[in-house]
Length: 276
Image 1 (cartoon, rainbow, N blue to C red):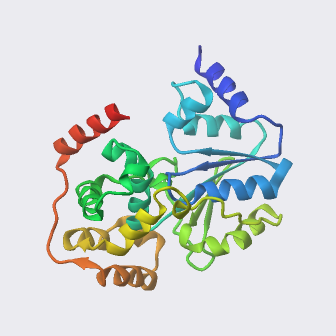
Image 2 (cartoon, rainbow, N blue to C red):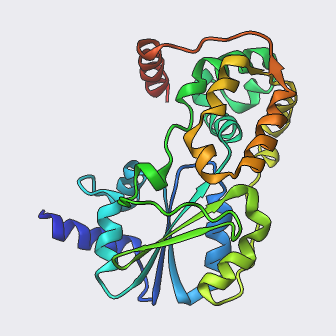
């Protein structure tokens, strides 16, 4: 099958209705995208197709096609007279790592969530620290979007929207979730109601997740790593960044803790994937 035929096939599988707006929530997991997808689908109704996708693996599951990228289908869609929006969400680094870790905790320990609730919290903390640099590594706005000169994040408006060809790239921050309704209502010129429909605390591991967050102390070397995080520098102003770092400075583990090295992590990842 030629690429154009693959794109047409994928498009027909993803986009079921002929609607004037197409919105791709193309962002990493654990950044609040599920809440946003539900809110946009309910609020915009027949005005928009809303596609929720994280990566090419998810695209192949949704379409059955493996030889195209997420951006291929976004670009194809933009050429069929749709007004296309691509939305990404920034979440603070440590919280995003924690959330991603707990979302896949069963595979990390090759055990059921019910059994993991009986684990000593120090076991979960130790594994998290071993994986810390490898968790939540991507930032779609920089790593996945074809934007050669990203616009600086607008701290005042709490969002940035940048048009490239016929595609509007919208960047939000999870810390501004209470502002999303006003922001999105302005952009889409229709009242957007935010529906909070997904909380880790409501899942089987919710109590364990709360215990983890209460007991976790950030190693000094990881704190230094976060102080130089380029995304934190980009999406936060100096005051916000200092407040965030200060909040973690009060929860530090004295001394350094060393993660898996690259070869150890690859070996660990291979075992984890085989267990899944």
